[in-house]
Image 1 (cartoon, rainbow, N blue to C red):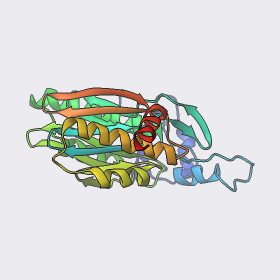
Image 2 (tube, rainbow, N blue to C red):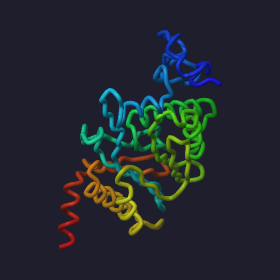
Image 3 (cartoon, one colour):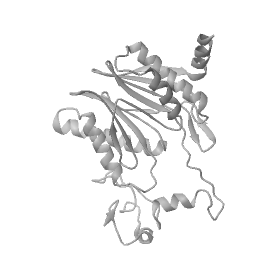
Image 4 (cartoon, rainbow, N blue to C red):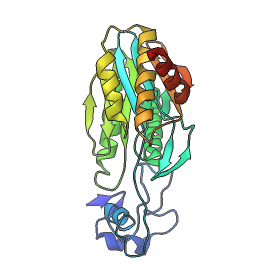
Amino acid sequence: EEVCGLAGRGWGAWGAEAQPGGVAHYAFGAREPRIALPCGRQPSEFLQSLGEGSADGHRIELAHGTTTLAFTFQHGVIVATDSRASAGKYICDQMVNKVLEINPYLLGTMSGSAADCQYWERLLAKHCRLYYLRNKERISVSAASKLLANMLAEYRGMGLSVGIMLCGWDKKGPGLYYINDNAVRLSGPLFSTGSGNSYAYGVLDSGYHPDLSVEEAYDLGRRAITYATHRDAYSGGVVNMYHMKEDGWIRVGRTDVSMLFDQYAEAKK
């Protein structure tokens, strides 16, 4: 058995023959993508050893906080996210764009580890471009989501943290899929991910229906993210919103969640 191109002689033997540019060292020119893994032990065990209860006193908390959502309606797909990036209990950035622009007709969201999501979605973007060059047509949303799920399946149980919503427009119309690090792949009209998703679902379930107008859909997306950030300490910043149309996505804009919450509170009086 081989993992990342390495012969399966046991996890402990990996570091012995690792040379720069060799099979244990990541190379962008490799025919197949290969990730440099921690030498000497199984990756998931390596992450656990650095977490709670580690012998040498390290405390790396792999707690990920975010709120992202996407839903289909009669005019396409709405994608909305917050912009707060956290490392454990530390807020490290308030202006992160958690929507990755894979190509003009395909968008992906980030939830979990930012590094993992960015890497795999950029790799997906490369394969989508290669598909277009080989076949002279765009890859379908379903095929792109299946490709991503298959790539993640090879690294199941190795410590990845990925929760991605993939949306786009192809010959069949608008499409929306959810994919995670266990290679789970789901299709549906509405998804929300991250630590604030339960709050976002509460707003979405009360206001969503397929016949929304464009302005109603924009307002629903902003409202769901805003109330989720109000209740979830790990979400915040601004609402980044995109609209996937038949002729490609457009960026609706970014709005500060504090300003939106004040507007909603004022409207209730």
